[in-house]
Image (cartoon, rainbow, N blue to C red; front, top):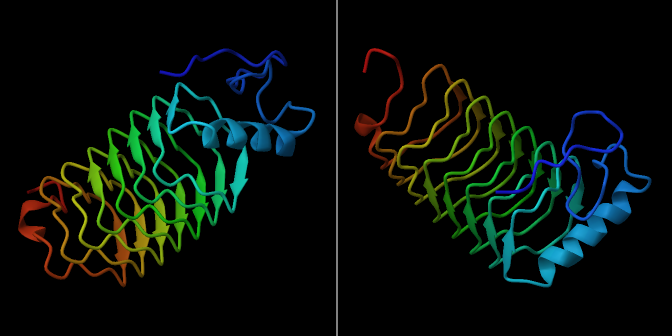
Length: 195
């Protein structure tokens, strides 16, 4: 798991990997994002990375494996994660716009409080994933395995979960508008506390 080294500025946030400060107190956050992107792209396996509050644009992270990484409050625009493997990593309160997570293997990962806009998670393994409090809009999860994932208190708009395994997936207190669960096993999901 990534080291929680405190920022030298004393703000209480975690310092970026390879730096003494967090992205907010960095002299040049864009340069830090470029440095960390270059580091990720040099290797197929990324472990223990701390990259919170950075913004990544138009980057292809496809086929990479991420283990124990922290991307708290990061931003991702037009990024590809196709065929990525992600384990025990944190994307809490991050924003994803026009990103592709299709054919991913994502397990024990947290997207809590994130915003997911116009993204695809199609044909993916999304097992034990935390989407609690996440705002999801214009996104697709079709033909994915969402076994035991959590969408508690999530807001989901105009999104598809067609032909998905949602066994033991929790949608308690979620707000759903224009959502399709066609051909998914909804009887095995939990939509309210009485189930």
